[in-house]
Image (cartoon, rainbow, N blue to C red; front, side):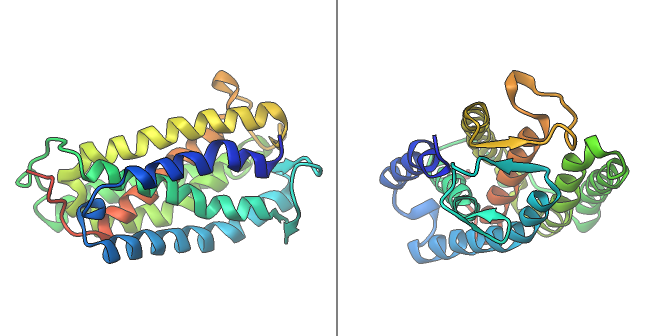
Length: 242
């Protein structure tokens, strides 16, 4: 399997299915607003991830079979650049679909003031950032350290600015994060097993539940979290919330 065929088998079909299944209004919002919100998240994901991923490959944290990709720009395969856009598109469309479903939430169940937001946000993000910095030293923790250090600033901003708004939507958001994450764990495990790409044993912990490196599991969890919360912040309050 090549990286391109990975997209054709695992990424593009669910995107097409989710696009067909969308209801109106799109994501419970005006179509133009919903598409602009998703487009902004896709663009932000592409820009923010590109330099980081170039560094990962430069350091040899992960690598790919030379016969599995069409070519590279910098150190990164062109299919990987495509994935930076396709993953948030996949996850965002799934979240749009969830917003049209009746998942019980309560509007009055809110975080009421800035102090409460800080009480949740600051300890969490400080812990994640400190964990990333502490893990930076040994070679076998490098991949996990780079993931935590890379995601922490974005997660801090998203939680600080949007926690109050998205708190009533937390059940829907949790489902919007969990389902794409599990699906991408499975797809990633297949690609790793087929040798489309590989994770360096030198720079990873070697803890591979079900054959999936724990770093890859963390990566897909935090990236889907950032996508879903980012889209939720840009959209108006969900009319399906009661």
